[in-house]
Image (cartoon, rainbow, N blue to C red; front, side, top):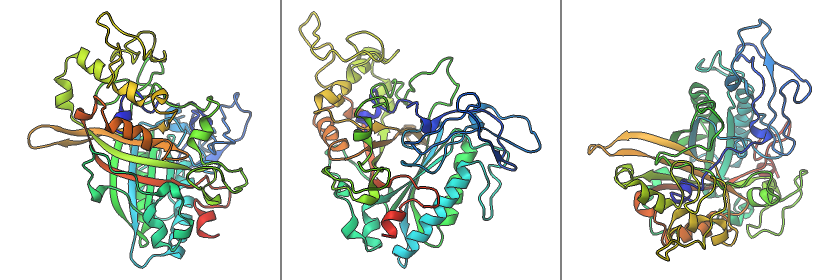
Length: 441
C-alpha cells in the first residue's frame, strides 16, 4: 500500500460514470452543453458519483475534437470527482498552507472560489478571472479537481472539535524516510487530465486563486499511460515495468462503497458506526493517503526477471499470479512447487498485500508515476505518487502498510519520501462549494 501497493495491487482503471468518455466537439472558446439520450448521444450520468460526461458543440462548428479531448467529468454530485474517475494521463498533487492571518472565514471564501473555478475548468471553460490562455482550444479532457483537508486545517480554522478521528496521524513505519517539507499540509488538491496543458492550466489557476489566503507547501507532477496507447484496454504498468492495478476494488463489488466512502445519506445525514467517528460534513466523502515512493530502479533493473517476479509474486509479462492463470486469477497462496516451497514466496508483495492476508483490508489505489530527473550519480529520481482512497484509514491503509513494513520483499527497492493524510468531503451540490457543510455549520 505504499511502495508496497505500488506494484501489482495498484490502481486499475475503474469504469464508472465519473470517468465516462463521451462524444467529441468541445471548445474552451465557445461551448454549448447539449442534453440528449444516454447512450445514443454518448451521455453518461453519475447519480452516485457526481460526474456527468456530456457532448458539447461550438456554435461556429469547429473541427471536432477526438474523444480524449471532448470528455467532460461533472463537478457536482454526491462524491467529489477524481476518486472513481478512471486515472488520467497527467496529474498534479499539491498541498497548501493557510497564511498566518487566514482563519475559518478566509478558508470558506477560498473554498468557494476554488469550487466555482473547478466547475468552470472541468466544463472546458476558461478561468473567469484573468485566464492565462494556456488551455485555449482544448476540450475538458477528463479534467478533475479534488479537494481535501489536512489535520492542521482544523487547528487553523478553529474547528478542532469537528476534526474526524480518521485524521489522527499515521503511525511511523520503519522504512519511512519522510521529508516534512513535502508532507502533510492544511489543504490538498488533486488534479487529473488526459491533456498536460489542461492539467497545468488548472494547477496554475487554482494557485493564483489561492492568493492571498493560502500558499503552496509542496507540489508534485505525475503521469500515466495515455488513453488509446494500447491496442486494447489494459491494466497500466508502473516504472518497474509491472502490471499495476489488478486487484483494485471495483464499483461492481457489493462492498465497494463501504470500503471507499464515508457512510451517510445523500442528504448529508449523520454518518455513524465507523471507527473514524465521521461527522455529517464528511458523509459521502473519503480519506486520501498520499505517499511519494521513490523506486530504486537501478537496483531493480539489475535483478533477473525470475527474481523480479518472485519479489512481486506475479509474472511480469501479463500480471498473472506465479501460480498460473490470467491476470485476474486468484492467488493460489497454498500452492507449493516440487521443492516444497510456496510458489508465491512468503514475502512476495502480492501475498503480503492481499486482502485475504489482511483481514479483508482494501482500498482504492489511484496513483501517478513520476520522474524528477537524475542525481549526480546518474540514478533516476522516479517512482510512484501513491494515492489511495478509503472510508477509514485505520481499516484500509494502516493495517496493510504495517504488514508490508514487517517483511515485504519489495521494500529494499523502494523508499517512502513524503506522506500525507487528508479528509476529502463529499461532493458539492448545485449552488454549494466543497466543504461548505463543515465551514458554515
